[in-house]
Amino acid sequence: MSTIDPAGPSASRVANLWWWMLGGSALLCTLVFTLLLVALFRRGVADRETPARKRVWIGWLGVVMPVAVLMVLLGFALWVGERNLPTDRAAQVVQVTAYNYGWEFCYENGSCSEGVLRIPARQSVDLDITATDVIHSLWIPRLAGKMDAIPGQINRLRIQADRPGQYEAVCAEYCGVGHVYHRFVVEAYDTGETDYAVEAAR
Ligand SMILES: [Cu+2]
Figure: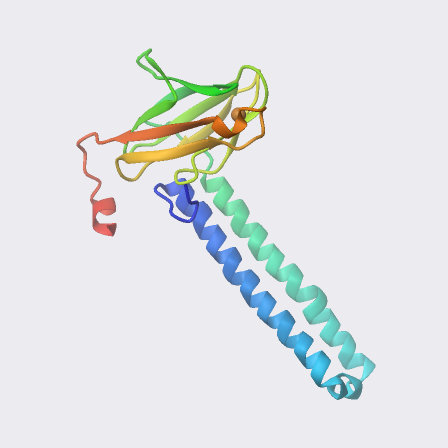
């Protein structure tokens, strides 16, 4: 159930964002601790700086750099979020209903399943998610980010599995004493079509 072991395009974009944020924060931490060590062990350096030069240091490292880094991260996160929105028609739409403590999935052909969501591999699937009692949250870590399941409202989440297989899913919003057991499994079945881009990437 690792978000950094993605198995679909949506989860891959989220995982990429996570790696960039990890890299950026590691870089900033290194910089901050280096400056801290300089300040602690070479106090004379700071004393020799003129007030004007100190203002330049504070301006660039204290204001400009954090604002620039946050703007880049914000822009990247918005771009990732935008690309994860289901703007076109998916190959299939599944109606998902969450309740204490189960999940029901109803497909376009009229059939329904409980506890197991069956989807074709390598095809986009939109989940129209709602709930009957309290607020839940649908989370399939290897396929996509979380989406709230709210009574009286339908929230759409686009998922896609790059390969056939089983993907664990959990409720990510505390919904009662049985919350810990509020899980399901996604079964991505092989449709017989081969996605050569995916095969080549293996
Ligand atoms: Cu729940």
